[in-house]
Amino acid sequence: DAGVIQSPRHEVTEMGQEVTLRCKPISGHNSLFWYRQTMMRGLELLIYFNNNVPIDDSGMPEDRFSAKMPNASFSTLKIQPSEPRDSAVYFCASSVDTTTDTQYFGPGTRLTVL
Amino acid sequence: AQSVTQPDIHITVSEGASLELRCNYSYGATPYLFWYVQSPGQGLQLLLKYFSGDTLVQGIKGFEAEFKRSQSSFNLRKPSVHWSDAAEYFCAVGAYNNNDMRFGAGTRLTVKP
Image (tube, rainbow over all chains, first blue to last red; front, top):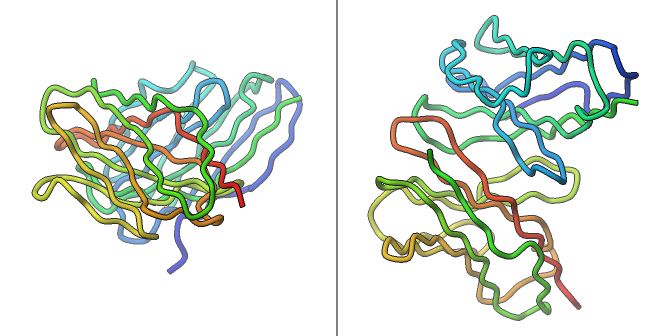
């Protein structure tokens, strides 16, 4: 079983550039989550989807961040324009059910904004 | 909304010694509780979870945790730590019928030879 797939694994970009992070959840899973992990703030939930519909985006830091899930097998997290303070590891996770359940995490994307 | 506190940022134990990592939660109803482990450069992996029933739950890699409602705690234990257990451990709390899960700040475990 493939697990949650994230790409790229590492991204280095310059301030002001657009960044797109990608996630493929486990097949058959109905919920998808985006998290950000930093030393200062720990693991933060940014947004989650149930059945491809965004349910709670209150964790999205500001309008520069947007997330989409056009179908059950793909999601993107976009930052436009990027800033150095966006540097972090971004995790995608998925779970089978739309209620509280085990989340399966991808390996993460380490983003560095110069 | 629910929240989690992990009082210990960093713990060091000797290999073979017992381990207890503390977790306290805040939630008005019956919580759903989880422990995850994160090895360096990796995503989080579930160790165990509590939804209902027996308050002592067994997980993978020889870990167990006990839910104590009176203390709002869900401490993680292992009787004998192995060097490969060195990692960061996260406690998390979820609400019934709500996929919004909150993670603690994590406890970094170092294992001395």
